[in-house]
Length: 155
Image (tube, rainbow, N blue to C red; front, side, top):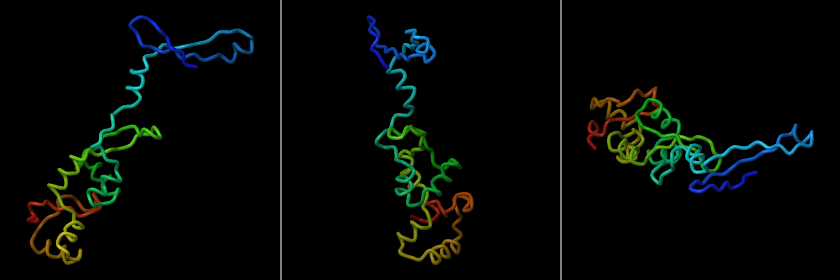
């Protein structure tokens, strides 16, 4: 049970609950805590959601990869993420800033994106990049996809 606790100059609420043992002995004892609702909600919420924060699924779609590749890029600190509390189920979730995705896309390009832009098959594009001596930006096994520096590819 929550009751407003009015004191001059303070906005606090008192939270009361009954004691089961006290009810058995027919006593009317209650326990309570005096809290500031704004301070409690600020401590519980954590990072404030912003319109520029993307869930992993949306960030992966914006990047042109899948969620597993994005999680590996985050784990190896190629893309920064922030933890926030989901407002619907109150669970912690990783979010990626749109600026972070745009900066990554400006610096790196995936083999999949290159094939779509140049309208070539993946094997043909990979063969041309290997012949030109273009090196991978990240370890393919660690990240789970092939990424190249845009300046090396010439885009």
